[in-house]
Amino acid sequence: MAPMGDVTFDSVPETWVANNGSYADMGLALGLDEPRALWLANRWHTNYYDDIDGVSADKSDTISLYQDGVSKERFYSLGADVHVMDPNFLANRFKGWSRSDVDDIAESVAPFFGNSIFSHTYAWHDSYRYYTLYEAFETVAGLFQREERYEAFATLHEEFQSKLESVAPTKHAERPRVAIVWADGNQPTSFSPYLVGEGTSVKQWRDLNVRDAFAETDVRDFHASRGHVDYETLLKIDPDYLLCRGHESQSAEEFENTVVSFMEDHPTASELTAVRNGNVYRGGPLYQGPISNLVLTERGARQLYDRDEALFDRERVADIVAGSL
Image (cartoon, rainbow, N blue to C red; front, side, top):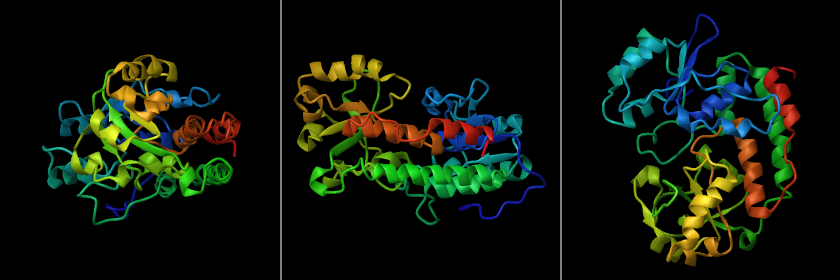
């Protein structure tokens, strides 16, 4: 798996550290124990599994690697068999680590084996391959020797995609214009823009055939620019739907009673078409894996197209996770 290439183990890894919730979700789908650590543990939103009987995750013992920086000693104390994370993310996402630090942990603790699949806009990830969600999932399944579970999920995903063909419009004029933003707090006035690019973090919106309102402007993706937009900018763009990240720990009702209520009372936000029409929703996380993608895409179909029926077989998901193939 790029960028590490071939990695060899004496036996199948048992304990692991993951970069983010994308890989943690893959591990759950493969029937693995939870990772010992994630970059930020609170961004693995295990509440997505609440309505799938037989599927749950307990991250109470999963720590955050990032705690006012990332300590090499933390990797030593975790003592994992493999680090399912992109080594270039660790060396480039923040100041403090060099490539020699990464090499030290890889040689002294365990190999790195991962790719930053969630975004395609980091400047340091322009010289090696990206993976789709299911390409990365297949590779991780091979790492843990759980290929049969991957194959079962891949079949389920194909069936799910075929159902979406009757949900999402194909004509350009019928596709909803959406703006995806990170909205800090319950009274947001400044937003980080996210474009519907090729990363896995927006897979559900690509599959639902949305039009990216930001793509029709000169606004750049937050991962590339670290820039922000305000309500005045959003009003100029005026998307049909405003999809707010950063609120995945809230229920839909909690989001309505806080963020949406604030926008409805705000003098500029209240002029947005999305606010006037009641089309402000939680926009999904940065990280999603095979299970959460099913949940989030179904939720998106409900938000955009008022489709209330179940679009995937929850019992089948639980069976695959349990190894009943």
